[in-house]
Image (spheres, rainbow, N blue to C red):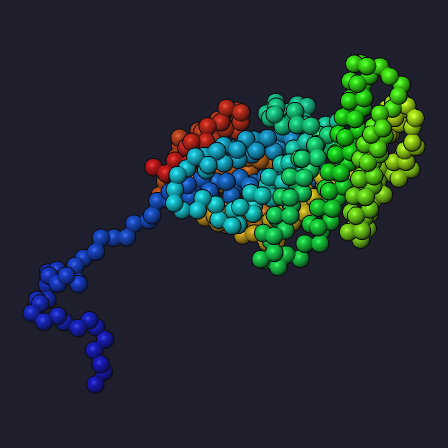
Length: 377
């Protein structure tokens, strides 16, 4: 005889009507949990960072995207980050993967939303939507030693963050850190020489004298020797070195001078030599910029999962599409603009109001208001 596989009948219960037992009470249907504003903001930050890392330059060249391509995304990211900082919540605002992608995007914006040299022009002259603030950023060669140091430390943080995923590109990252350290040393030397010359000129205006203060020459030559020592140390870390990464040793030789005027002239000669190298674009900044851009894209593609909004299929038109992989690359900053889940209706399509907002956003990026993206109502 086959065993009975159905539910056992409850004693003293009829065959019809709901059960009066507490254990058998009808439960209300489960509901989908609405994401908190902080979670929506985190997802928007993650998706925007992915868009920044997914931009492409001219198909006919290996150049990085123009400043105007980054401008809208950079502005939107700043807005979401401000919202994230103002959110009060006990839950973590940013997960580890989001933090790593945000760091990658920030590094891209520091290195790529500016030219390498003053005469370079990465901004499309016909593009009125380019962010004016981005256009005013000084070129890489004019970055201060503090800015180079900050960039170097952030790359070091990136190396630590990727250590948990067995990153095979750690050696490449270390190489870029060394190159950035070289430009940090160059920026420091240029600043020190300019300051020394200014101090000499200031002293001369107060009490003109041909007599050389005993510390003036040693002070300037000390800066030069410090730079030379840093260059040798960095050389020892790199397996292959671009000879143009450093100021040549022959330019760094300073003969002892007997007067303050000669000390000043010697410092000015060194400064002029460095400025001539800058004018001729001798330092490999364009290579550093392009190569680091490509590496940061590769790191996101190989080691980070697709952002949540890409996995669930929220794009600029709000429709559900197959989840995009981190390797997906867009051709413009507007191709994959995400909208929050709260901005879409139950069938996966954005409301007409959201579509209108997105259309206006594309027409006037500078006047964008992203409050509707973050709203979780």
